[in-house]
Length: 278
Image (cartoon, rainbow, N blue to C red; front, side, top):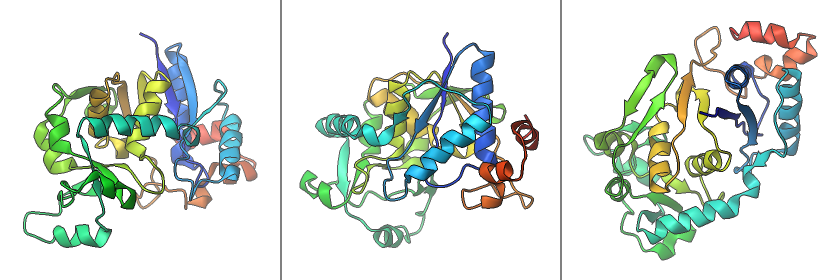
């Protein structure tokens, strides 16, 4: 079986040690398997994406010794593909428009037994599930989870990460109680992370997804979308996160741990590998 994996950063800030670990692990796994490592720029959030951050991603990765085929896939160039996928889901009656604000959702979830936190935050209570399609321009598009589940069977994926290794089966209860009617398109983007990542992985022929364990719960969403759209499900490898001295996972605001900062200090790529345990 071919091995094709990818690293898919967003150009919204500097790459840090957590990114270094993920990209080096993915590139190492591809090299060991005699496979292919790809780079993808996830820039659907144009309000935060910056050209200079994309340029620094390339510089940082080359400095780490990572190479990839060109051209690089950029999500901002694929909006038409995302729109077409949404149209197909609309035609099957699997989407609905939602105009609820965060405050509306918070108020609805104040009732007893509500307020479950899922991969995207509080699980949506379905307030707008019967709203006419004409309202879509005024809000977000959500997946009708119950309707989606009625059209698929045998939801599972193969995991190679140490914490969840093996076949991971996904139950209807997980989706209805822990995931809910997720957002598939936002007004300011025309898409969402979940929809875009699934379509892009398929477009690039990704067979193995290597990413942080903070995205493990989101994989259920991605597997469901793959089934709904007739796409293959890759194998997944969710790795441990790089954390600071207090045990908190790194974020882009942690500039002191940015790859560029270590470059400026005169460190080398091998030292960074040692820092992240590779």
